[in-house]
Amino acid sequence: MRRDFEAMAGKTVTSITGCRVGSEDMAIAFADGSICRMWHNKDCCESIRIEEIHGDHADFVGQVIVSAEASEVEIAVPMDDGKQTDTFYKLACAKGYLTIRWLGESNGYYGTTVDVDWQGQ
Image 1 (spheres, rainbow, N blue to C red):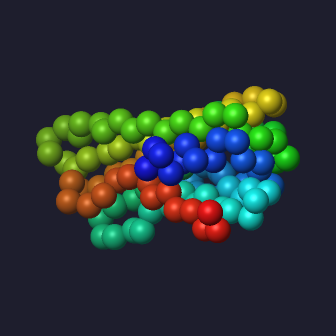
Image 2 (image 1 turned 120 degrees about the horizontal axis):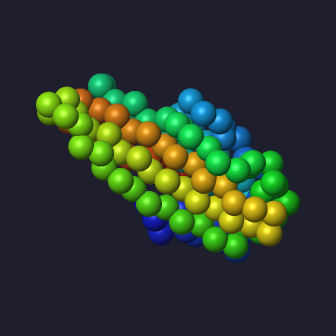
Image 3 (image 1 turned 90 degrees about the horizontal axis):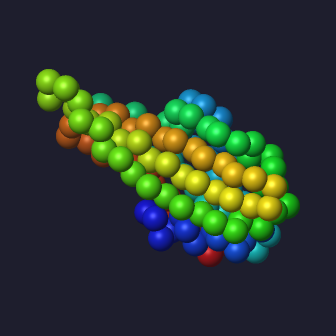
């Protein structure tokens, strides 16, 4: 996951779609024709969505990404009620920073992490 996300460093952004709280699918398109998609192949009893955003994704259009980092924190859920995972994606360009926190929740038997897929890379 980290290596795939970090591969966008040095690329010029042409568009960002789905970057809003509640979204379950987000994509970043680049000038070289590649697209990085963040999503999760949903199964029973799980939910993965954007929970929080700091920064303005519009500032990144036309800019080169100078830094791209991903980190993940699994949250203990009391009483064996399942699991939660916070996944943080942090981007930097000359105009500023963007941090996107995805929240994954499940009953404990299903995945709670974000899938990062590339097209045209």
